[in-house]
Image 1: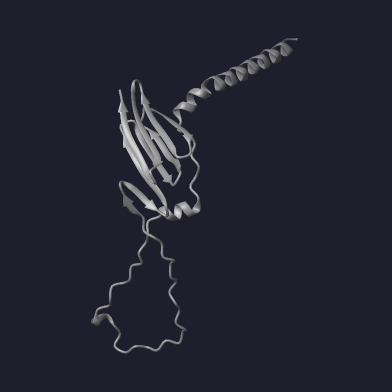
Image 2 (image 1 turned 135 degrees about the vertical axis):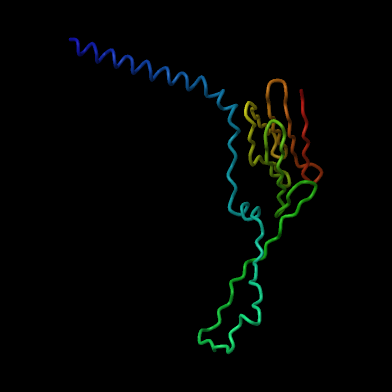
Length: 177
């Protein structure tokens, strides 16, 4: 009889504990969702290639006359062609935006945090938004060609408003409070 009562007590305790964990998770989920930046889509392979810095092959320095052998030996191996890389357009910077393949990328650094935005004709996307400690970030995009990132702390708000406007990227940073 005593062991059955102990088992029932432990089972009731486990059920109450599991229920309280579930209720806590549902209650804290919206709060934690505002503290964590919105998820962003990962970059595609072609976007990564466009952002990669262009590498320039470095040729070895010419050998000095004293380091060359006195009599050259004939080679019996067939000559091999060096692999050539496909030419890529180097990214350029225009009005603070890094331009690569028709896409514009820009980082914004404010007291509330850092954000990176990609703008293409008719489309604006958030690459990343990282708030500073004690700050929160809120991202709003009601239209595909406009994005608003807010860094919030108390009554202070840093606002980054990015859009495709007049056939070019446009961004405005402002502080409220």
